Length: 203
Image (cartoon, rainbow, N blue to C red; front, side, top):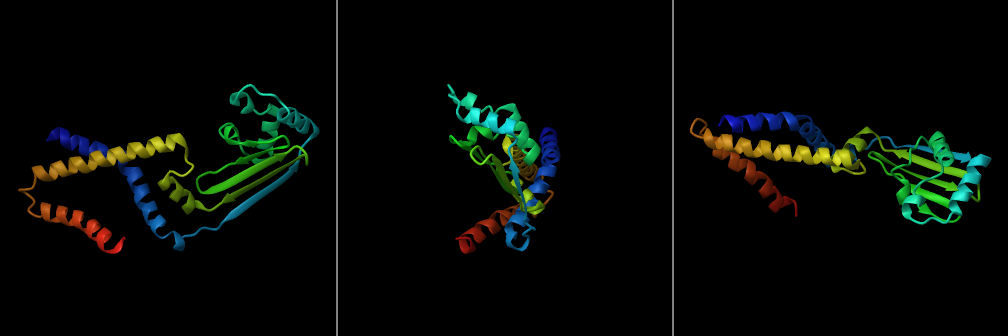
């Protein structure tokens, strides 16, 4: 039993912070209509300096052999985008919509959204970022929405730790049922309540 207990407390320690986060954001998601945050929008319109416009025109007129070459913006254009909007585009440019005259990028993120257009004809950058607030950010963490690979792996690790925590807890209940006569009554109740709610009220 010692090893089971060890797995139980180790898994609980590993998943503690994540379990609290997902429990709290489960409540905020369940009452999203009552907890809407203040939406803040930032808009940027910036004319392209001549050297940026020249580099952009050359890029748009380029004959690229593969998608990897197309994904690499000229440094002067990337730097101008970063200076104007604060965006670093290394992970977005592969999904950009590129035409002969402009580049459009959708820039989703947890808790908000953004888009950017850099127009060679108008020699102008247009950028808009929307922030839906901290609660929306936490809710998107709960859903894994636009959170990246590292957060996705973290969610998998927390989920696995919770499974270990639950199964080792069940095993400890089985081993100690004689000392705790209410064990199976409470365990059965914990299983039946969500099933009954699903059958009677969640269809």
